[in-house]
Length: 207
Image (cartoon, rainbow, N blue to C red):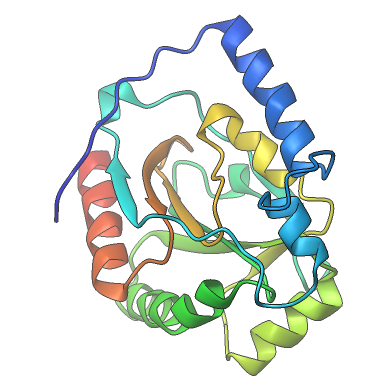
C-alpha cells in the first residue's frame, strides 16, 4: 500500500476560515451544482462527488487535536466518540443512499466490521448518513444488511467536527486513533483489504 503523509500547520485564523467555508459548502448555501449539498438535494443515485481513491496516513507525531463526533444514530440513540476514547479506534464512513459508490462499498465495510468483531479488536465503526432523513438511511442500511451503526446527519453539519480535515467527497472513510485524532483517510470508495490495512496500522501506532 502506498502511503502519503502530510505535515499540517493550522493557525487559529486558518481554522476559523476553513470552518466557515465548510459550513457554507455543507449547509447547502453554495450554488455549485457539483457540490455535495446540491447533489444530495437531487434525491437520486446519479448525483454524487466521487473521491479520487487517495489514501492518506498521518504519523502519530503529526496528528491534530482530537475530534469529538456526536449525534443520534439512525435508531435514535445518542452517541459520542468520547464514549470510546482511549478504548477503541473509530472508523468513520460518510455515506448516503443517493451515492452509488457508497452503496457499492458497503459489503467491504460490512466484511471488515464482521472480521474485527470476531477478532475482538478494539475497533468501533460509525457511519455518517449524510444529507437525508433517518428513515431513508435506515431503510438502506436494512436492505444492505449493514449491521454497524450510523449517525443521522440530515442537515449535513456533523462533518464540521473535523475542521479542515473534514471529508469533501462521498464516500469517504476516516480512522480516529485511541486519542480521537484523525490517523488515516480514504478519499473515495475503500476496499476491505485497504481498510483492514489502515485499521491494523492505526492499532499498531497506538500500541
